[in-house]
Structure formats: structure tokens, C-alpha cells
Length: 418
Image (tube, rainbow, N blue to C red; front, side, top):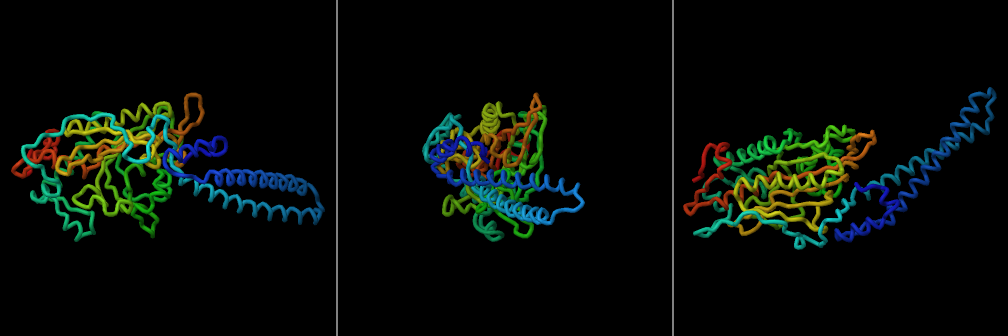
């Protein structure tokens, strides 16, 4: 959530943010609601002070004037009316504020959509094939390790079943990615619930704007996690950390569920865009002055996975029009998939500054004892289905077999799928 002081003192920042993101926000309405709320708070505080003062006077008087008693009853009624009005105004103000995205950092390139994203670097050359490479759905189907039909039978379209060495490869990939971040990059592993309450996904900023794309249990008002980012953000909701606790670095594997309502008709073949997928997530709670340097480290930690898989990848800096809702600055990491002939996003690494911590009231006490909001960062390390796609397509052989990347062999126990 943005700082209400921006609405009060620098609303032009919101206007500029909306223009950079290609959106418009009801700034005048926000200003009016905030002024109305503050005015009513002043009025109700004055009435409460009056009531308290008169109550003290009446307590020392034996014969209490009836007209004064009636006046105090009227004051009580006025207070109740104002309290209800303040609540209604506050609810309206919060609803608008919760739907305003983070303000892009000044270093983010301007642009309307993904076509304006900037390639920062490309690492490794795409493999040269002596044959025409196949897309992953053909490779995996021929090897008997991917069953799309059973996914539809068991659930619906955009679900799938992995079999035999395909399932083992996925499990091995998850374990290796977790171990890499834990042993080499000093992240603390954490196991999380897969269902979280409404307060958690409001705090992580997935609600209210992302609700249509989330799976929701109505009876208990719980949401299947769209990413581990949501429950990790909620770990320290309404908490004050010590400066000595920062940075806190977590890594977690969870399934992720997304209804993909916003991508109807896109990428329907294979497992590129599905409703349930596994992901290893990296997350940091840091001091504000460190957050942008920590973002660069986060990208390097995610890139390490791509480098060790020895698959050509590239890093993109997202433009203002393609930033995620909570992000002030983001980088995407993409792997090359020669069979599908496209770059696949396998990680998005973002600095959310104090946007999530303000919504979740996550603070820390600095050396002078002052309480400040932490900055939060998140990044995929990596998204499993698309990494599987890249492995199958980059390591396929002319006879239809697939070589297992060297770093994964100790985890799979085999070096070839045929």
C-alpha cells in the first residue's frame, strides 16, 4: 500500500505513477475522502473531550442537572453517528488505496507493455542442433513421462500428470534448487501452509486486485497460495523486528495455484501455462537502504540455477507498464526453449520496497530505537514446469532421448531418459 502522506502532500506522484503504468487513479476522490475522515475525527475527538469533561463535573455534583444529562446523551448519539461515518469513509478510502499499485522506482525504464522491457544480458549461446528440435509436449509424450489426457480426466484442462522419470526429474529439480539456495546462498528453508487466510493475501497485495485468478474456499474463506510470496510475507505481519534480524532470507517450495482467467486461449499446449505448478521461492526482509543492492543479489541467486543447468538464459529489466502490482522494480529471467522457439520466463525478481510491509505492518527498530517499515523482495528460484520444458528441449537427442543435466544426476540417480 502506498503511504497516505503521498495522497496528502504529493498527489502529483500518484498521477505520475499512473501515467507510467498506463493507469489512472481516483486521486481527487482519495484526497476528499482523507480530508473528510480527518475532519470527522477532529469533530468526534472534540465531542469525546466535552463528554469526558462534563462527566467529571457531574461526578462531583449530587443533584445532576437534567438538561446537562440530556445534552450528554445527545453528545453520545452524535459520537455514534460520527464513528459510523468515519468507518464508512475509512472503508471507502481503504478500498481505493488497496487497489493502487506500487510506485515505480526512478530507475525503471518507461514503457507501455512487455515490448519495452530491456534485455540486460544474455548468458550462453543457444545449442546448435543437427536435427529439428521438438517441442516438449512431443518429447515427453513419446518418452511416456507426461500425460496431459489424465490431467484433464482427473481435473480439467491445464492440469497434467508426470510419470516415472518425469516425476523423478521434477522432484530432483526441486531438491537441487532448494539445496543450492540453502547451502550456497544462505537462505533459510521454510515449509508453509498451502491455504492462507484473507488477511495474509491482502497483506501480500494479491487481494483485492488478483482475486479473480485465485482459488478460494468459500466456507473457511481460505485461498490456495498463488505463490509462496503470500504466506512468507505474512510471517511477520503486525511485528516489529530487531535491526539485528535483518536481512532475513527464506526459501520455500510450494505448489502454486492460479486460475489463469487473464490468459484464456494463450499457451494451451504442453505445460507452459497451467493451473497448478511447483515453484521454489526466495524472499527477503531487508533494511530500506539495502533493498536495491539486495535485489541485484537476488537476481544473481536465481541466475545461478540457470547457469548451472548450462541453458542459455537472459535477464530483462521490466518497464513501468509491465511491472507487477506490488513491485517498484523487477527483473525477469528467461530460459531459451529451442523446440518451442521462445524465451520462457522462469523467474521474476522484484523489490516491493515498503508496499507489502505497510499493508502487513512489518517493521523494525533501528539503532536509534526508531521504528521503520522493512523492505520486502521476492523472486522465483525457479518455476518448475518451465525449467522442465527447457531441460527437455535443450537436452533432447536425435533418437528421442533426453540427457539429464550434470548437476541433477546425483539427485535423479540416472543420466538419461529414453
